[in-house]
Length: 551
Image (cartoon, rainbow, N blue to C red; front, side, top):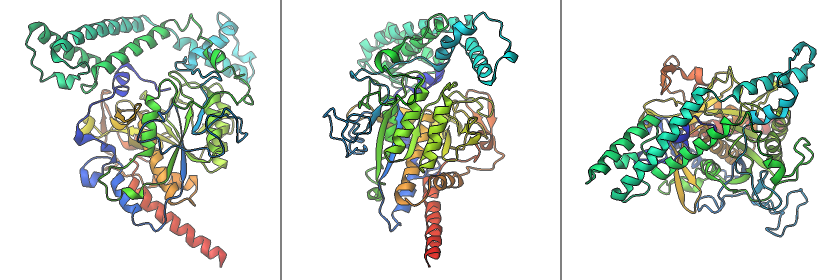
């Protein structure tokens, strides 16, 4: 699930009209541009020195849907050549009918799709409510499985409570939203722009006094709410309405069980992993904003004025729709990973996460299946500013079932840049020196959005992960003999340490500072140029070793 506080919801989910100087700032180089980017242009310069041509590499994007008609993406999708498009026949006999570019695990056979779903804590709470509510439970009398089940339920019972403070906050946001709508309607009459931003509004000089007062009140209100001043009016309203709807849903979540939407649309036997051939071939779905943005970052199509553009790696994107507006289902995640592996993906991007994972064993098993098949999994750390040394967010590389840590999985935290937000760190990224492996840009990142030729800015660790996935795909495309474990090593070892390890950077909005070594294991930001240079060394060593063995 893409989880956001109000502040994050309003900033992360809004498309931003950002200045041209900051366009694709995450591609830039610290030495050349004084920006903490990934040195992508310099990486293409490294590619230009390589004698080998890029080999095809499939990157699976497990997300909420991808717009297959976007001009920048439509020619980059993986194509299942064993399947005849739209003939409603499972030509390749893999159980998935017309899976041309991937699969939609949130769809029904009748073409309907799950859009919004409940959070996992509500599903768990209501599943066991009749068993535990009002009961005096002696945990000493329970076996290990029952005890874990009860303790998890007890935790969800506390979290589904909607406090008076929550109710007061909701009432305030409703009032502020109504005010913004009225003020916006007044401003539009004179401004003649139905999708203005606060940044555009600031220099505007209204003729009428009423409009002037509306302008000043609007600017004050968006500042109080923490809305980014580059956020367009329509999307501010949309996000506020969605936030209110979500909170109203949360207010009754303890009383009202989640609607049986999966039973109605998908109709699978959820608790049987062998019942896996559900869904449909619509990988776009009803809301492809997040997934389209992520897919664009995986592709990371270079600027047309780069002379090294012809060295673009042979990346193909496989779309797997399994993240609704709400918490993803463990079964879909497990089967999505297995589908990606079985159909040739060598990198899997997973920009989602949640606080509960009742069928964690299924996902853990799928991650280790990917490891056996030499597939690298890149996962976003999450946007709640949690210390992951203290709090779990799933999927996680550690498995209590297997009692090990997946070596083929990388967890990515998000950084910013002082030119973007005033700090190197973000106010949202989860962190933790034991869980978060490395960092990547994730603040106000430009990429594709749904629409034929639509682009915009989003922020979150969801953006940081696919930036790393692109670098991983570059390595696997130009150095196909390197294993997933070696690619992970290269990405971590080549990360750029920005300065002295002892330097503490301010965390915006949190009134504290942290060193990069507190934020992640490596304490550095991924660097595409460094990674390719190191991959070249790895590959040379491997070729030399192979030659020695054949003599």
